[in-house]
Image 1 (tube, rainbow, N blue to C red):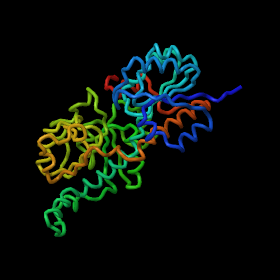
Image 2: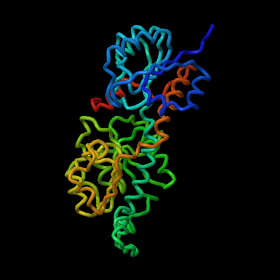
Image 3: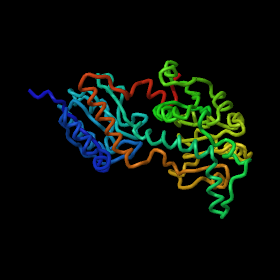
Image 4: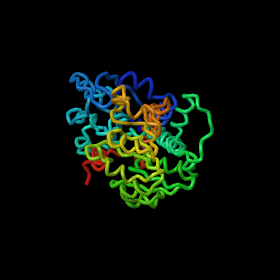
Length: 357
């Protein structure tokens, strides 16, 4: 009798070619048999709405113990799941923070575990956050502009970077502490930094486990040398950091944003930066250059105390296969009787949507 689980991977050709690395497929094959359901349609954040594809997937699912979905897959609704009597676990690879490709309530009603590994792109984001902290403390954007203008003179002793440039011993405040924040804390430890965190959705015990002070948003903004915005964009966080919050930031501090531009009010941010006493390192801004193709009227690009990157923090060649690496680990854990780590639950979805109390 074959006791190996059968796994179906439902995605488009691009995901099959770019995300599913040979080494991860080889690891999957050590404990399971797998097959691919090719499906084209939809995008990164939306689902394939073709009824014929949904019917074909439902007809295919019988006998599979696990299912991995990604771009191109239709929504796994009750009708599809009713045809998958053996299905025990469903995993979403990437881009589906709000579970549009999985009817999670229908899955839970049928006892199906739901996980996602969209945090695969968090790894390079945490690295770039560390880089932007250090770049901002040295006000490197200013010095790069000087060089481009032909000024190679040494920095004067009243230069921002000369005064504030060391990261060692600084107090770093994180606004949000999910996967990115927890990895960033690991990177900051060798610098002997004190970590303060504002995250209303985080269990209090996490402060002791990871090693930080859990505090208020006002404390992070007003009492930290480096402030890093890691909060996801939700209806509750849009514009969360406005003029009142930005006015709390003390002279000599730096502000880094690697989350989403809409979390910080752009007009208020430009106004605060024009005072010239803080520095910002921004991978994201509103409007988002990645989505809109420009930074609005471009005023943010002309400020001397700003370093910009065009929403690149999570985009590296290694980040795409990492989604599947993490998913194979999840399935390996699940089918060997261990706890999965990245479960989609009612709480996790509410946290991401900003509807949790």
